Image 1 (cartoon, rainbow, N blue to C red):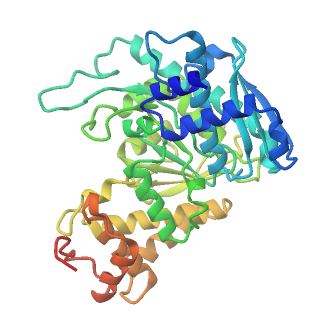
Image 2: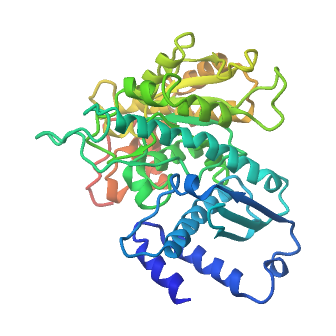
Image 3: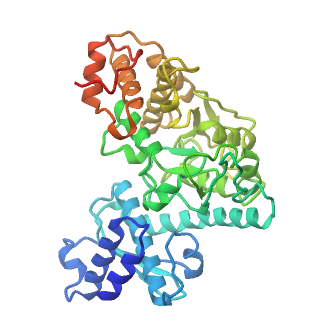
Length: 436
């Protein structure tokens, strides 16, 4: 097993789980007993992802000048396997056993696993369809790079530090593709997500998780609310990029006027299994942040949005009678930069963010609900709630945690206790440096 160990050590930016998965794959390949023997007789799910030249362009992996073609294909297989394991877990196919991804030469990569979950049987078709749409993102990247527009790809970093690199093509891999309850439209993924091989392991999505569980989404289900389409499928530093990814370029290279990546992936992800009927609702979309809202308003001028503005829109020209509920929202991390004296203040912005999470939960649970009425109800619940209400406690707790030190963040019980002592009034904020 020296080859596996050597190439795993070379994947410095992949999460440690990649090597563990690779080791597991080798055990599966080398063991005398078939995987089925310790997977409890679950049905085999087997499918091919290919061709290799296409798949290799869609997954991130570290290459070295001295690696062999075999090493490269095995590294790619490990990357595919890591992200696929995340998707299976987050799609709640938790009984998936014996997952392996093995190179098949020019044909691509063979995926095998065992599962009794009914959704597992269609996972090959689901992943293949997702990758087919995702290829359009790479098409947009190539068009951007070929345009010679100096503002399109890694604009020169000025003395103010604006637009620092590196940038890299990066798809929203490892997220639910089948059982998601909503779709997030975001600006671009932070580079740290690619470095850690986990799209959800960053401050933005960590806060979104906290908002969702605060409004009642079970902790076991929060990943069903994380399926994402970025208007720029480009990993870049999480700060210092203001103005570096303008809405016009998203429309030009990734929208209807470009590669069609955004509308194609959105259309595919909002569709629910068995939703061919015109009256079957699609999953809702929440549009986060001014850049994503700007793209949405340019792409769907007949259904514009703003923070907490909801409505319905048709995302599929082939099915003009099918509509998708939507709402605009703040960027999930924006509120943490506000204070008690800023405009808007931390409490006002947190109220909007909790209303957004409330909308996501309600529409995710019942996609055929009225989105405008749902948005109004959620907004009313967190708009200056009475101090003795659960919403007031949630609002105060959220603000107190948001403003606590990044590397010494207050726990939920700690923030709740402080809020209870202060009549659920977050401002003025606690003295975070005071001894308990």
